[in-house]
Length: 211
Image 1 (cartoon, one colour):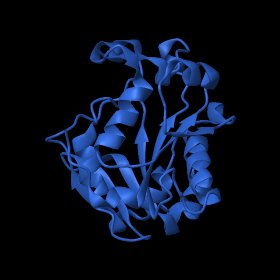
Image 2 (cartoon, one colour):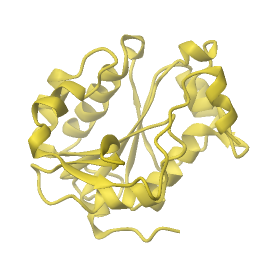
Image 3 (spheres, rainbow, N blue to C red):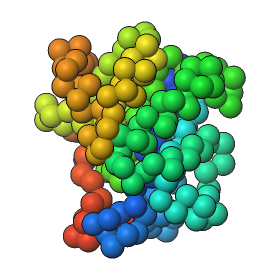
């Protein structure tokens, strides 16, 4: 198991898990089965084992079913009624929830100074990659992302002083891409290609990657 980093006390994880799986025949991604359990549990476990003490899970499609079937004990659940509008709405919902609760004060009473954003449909990204990106946190202005053979991917770390601007720019399915492109020279890239695989579960063909 990956050893938690001390930065975990200052960084709150935001797991985007609201997607409806349109290209999967309308099967919500959070509820896809992986190792016998809902995929969302796998993602939460990776974030916790990577060092994040508090995990905000943004739900949308089949939110009540996710609550009923997945063990999300200790997580802060955020409902995103605008999930059909795309990932940008879920990112906004997560960051706004952090800002509304004292800059991300979690269940352990520690205020977050950054958010580590991860996607529910990337089971190849585990605790080791989470820990590496978490370790890149330096201040409220931090901006870091995992990279795979030099190509930027997830998870992505946003210092708290950046949240409002990121939320304002997050639209459609682009998430934070516009913000990241505009601030590309400020991003600390953390190579994770040796410990993780950044594939997405988007189509029927991708389901073969689940176990």
